[in-house]
Length: 166
Figure 1: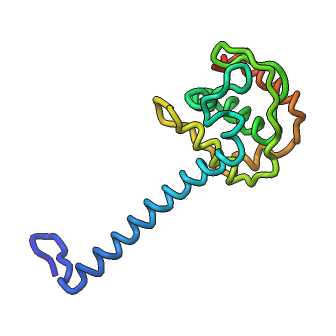
Figure 2 (figure 1 turned 90 degrees about the vertical axis):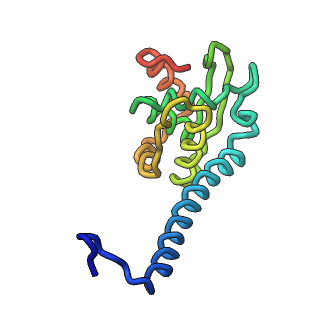
Figure 3 (figure 1 turned 45 degrees about the vertical axis):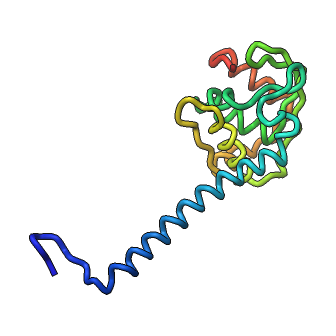
């Protein structure tokens, strides 16, 4: 039935249709929430203890929150961060003007989705702008070649020459 060019929905369908839309909305919202929770949980289980909840520890481990999102703004930075998680990094670095003689293990044993969740969680924390996104496909594309952690350090040095790393 039409009224002034607008289709009217039979009253007997309104409540079921409204409930269906509500269920779809709740499902979509919970999926977003659960994905964000996966990142937080995976970060806490694998990274949080050494990185002290993302804030770092002077002279021990660099802060992640408010830095990693800046690094990930370029394709080169994006790939570098994936390589850090997949292969680890070893050697002296400077982060936010502080020096660290740093060694981070590889997290290659984690799934592509888990690593993407971790990176998305980290880049979204304290980011003043829209955070770059990582997908499981991004991670899978960087799994080979396997790099030594010292090679990842060399990637950092090269990146730092063209895109200063905070």
